[in-house]
Length: 528
Image (cartoon, rainbow, N blue to C red; front, side, top):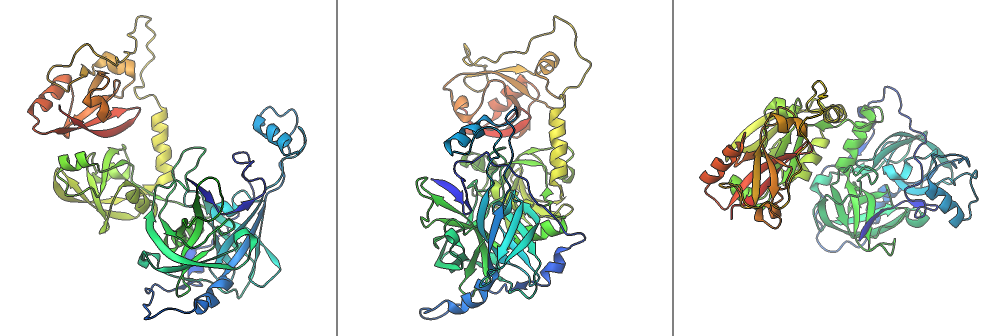
């Protein structure tokens, strides 16, 4: 199975990975989201239950369909010189396959077709980022109007696939915006858009599921960077060209923006599995785009996260698997300043329960830098409360990256020719490290070993010199070359510390925190 977005592009399949981004990105000066919000129409009441069968959805569509527009995007041909050594050789192959001529002929431009939703009478329009990204020209056609209005891009966000564009027009019919947090599985929904260029197409279905995450629909395939996902799943028929269109409830209110469909890889048509960005999330991104001058600023904690496994839940005394495990706290970040610690389990944010690491990441991304967030955590089996003032994601990620790029043990270069070589971990030891885990041998992280491995002095622990292949420790994820920093949530400074903690441990699985390549993680390792 694979996911595809819903835009229609010339040579889209053949040119995947080769088309260049660029185009017109413009933000209006001194614009604030509240200036747009006061022109928008909101209705947060739940859908009214109606006895009997609804014979027609015409009343709901009467006000909704004029707010759905067609969006055309166009990128100019990109010239390629014959002696351009930087040109991708795959482009030359595609030129020949598609009959586009040899070197020196321009690469073709890209045309796209999508949908959008009018948010305000003066021409602010919500759509998917992939509909307008990289376009040199964007035009919009309104319902029942053959005129095409030129549009400017206020801002777009790849990580959620949300964009805001603007046309110069007045007295437009805006979409009434519903509260997507009140949507329930089984609610009747209608999809409105321009599939395959068929304007104002309406299809009907139900909400199949809520909170679909980790689908990698918004992931950046070039960098592997994950996006932020919280999709509404529906079986309403949605096809290519529906991107950016409206998913409305039975009363005609926007509760989602159609974004992607799931296919079997053989067909690009509808299979009854489609995904829409919830309206609350989309409008929040619009707010960030407007107030951020076309760029989304996100709150940031500075922690590494993991889900709660059965073994870890049992060891930490958790009643269920809900929550997010803090496996790393970066130095100098808001999380460290507020007192969050490794092995903390976050179970609530601002009284909202947290199911897993992906949800915690999503919630924090929706906050702004400077927001104060109240956490309920479990530490050592006890409930605690921690308040964190969030930082700026982009700024702090650059700080963390710059630290990682600097040698971890910056000292005067050692020019001695007889300095100790970096130890090579062995995979299959002759025997076990007596008193520790079967199949595992340890080595103290002394000064010489630290220097050879370039381990920062702040990292305390013991070096795993070998792990027997097929041992229970190896199956749990323990590997030669790792540094054990904690066992049973107790700090380890030497091999003797590790042996003592294990010998005094009473249980089937022991939690082992390891450090490697600048990252920490937690393993549940069986003792037998």
